[in-house]
Length: 117
Image (tube, rainbow, N blue to C red; front, side):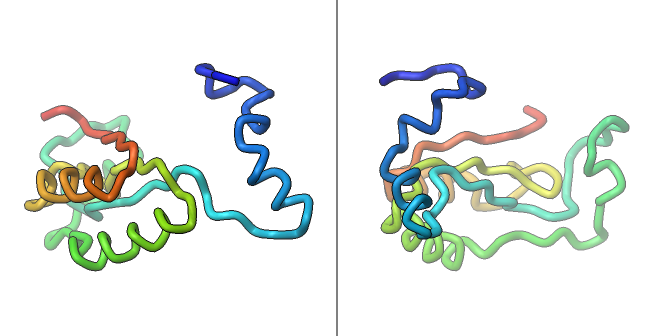
């Protein structure tokens, strides 16, 4: 079954193995995860952004090798999608290109949420 609408109520049927595990009392790994690459750093000042007041003098950047180690684990458990976001702007991470390449090489489907600047 191919479902392209993310709000389709039949979506759960695409992942019957996860549903069967839940019925058995198992806690499955998520299919898709969100990872904040940056906290408090942005190259814009959008007043409508939920992170507008989150700018820090010294933004916090996720450490690439620790991220990749964790992602290899969740991939081995069945997670297949990753949304790279930020507690601000993910492209402010100095290793964004390497991170995208390495995450892709692990096998993830990737989305990147950015302000585009």
